[in-house]
Length: 270
Ligand SMILES: C[S@@+](CC[C@H](N)C(=O)[O-])C[C@H]1O[C@@H](n2cnc3c(N)ncnc32)[C@H](O)[C@@H]1O
Image (tube, rainbow, N blue to C red):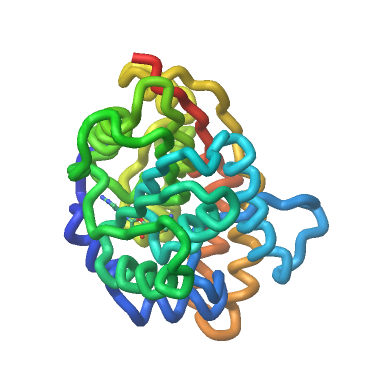
């Protein structure tokens, strides 16, 4: 992994920008989720399939998780709270969502206030300093977010600390399969999203094992990431041609193996 160039303060400012949130809601997901899709039919997917594919990804993760009404789930980097509220609706579980962005936490709380019977709460916190006791949660869940954290290893160790023994940590994240990246990929992908080249898929699994997790499943989702950027590039074309171009460059980065997307299902075993 390279030198840390971006700070948490940079990331917080990026996601606290309410204009950016509105911009992304106009073509990504009107309900404010910011992750990627799991397509039923990769070859024929069309722009209108994008949001349902993001929902399908939530469904896949929930199926793998074993979350039930008895579970207490930490959602790390919950963004606008769509997934946290949805999983509480689906299962009756308790969810605590944390995010670095206070504007996202405000949005998540406002959305949750429409569902007073759900056991969901949101706190503005960093994944690198969780204000929870050891062994507090049965599950830790995260989507499309950990790559933003300059001290990623610290965030993984924190997720491990707050989980009970036998607890499940499931998340998807961006990975950097190759060692060198091109200038275009640096500019349009890594610098645009304020992150440095991160773990390869194998190095990620090794890191999780080193921390005390047993890795139960690794799923390479890179083809679905490629399709997601193809579709959001089309969706953003009219209103935001610069972003649309950045999304095309992101597709190229994925095709060149300079960026990937992986899912990890892990259990705390020590
Ligand atoms: C691309 S968004 C994904 C949000 C959400 N998981 C979703 O799928 O819609 C990335 C999120 O990571 C959050 N984030 C970045 N660094 C963080 C940190 N150190 N601690 C907590 N949240 C962080 C951002 O504020 C943002 O909400």
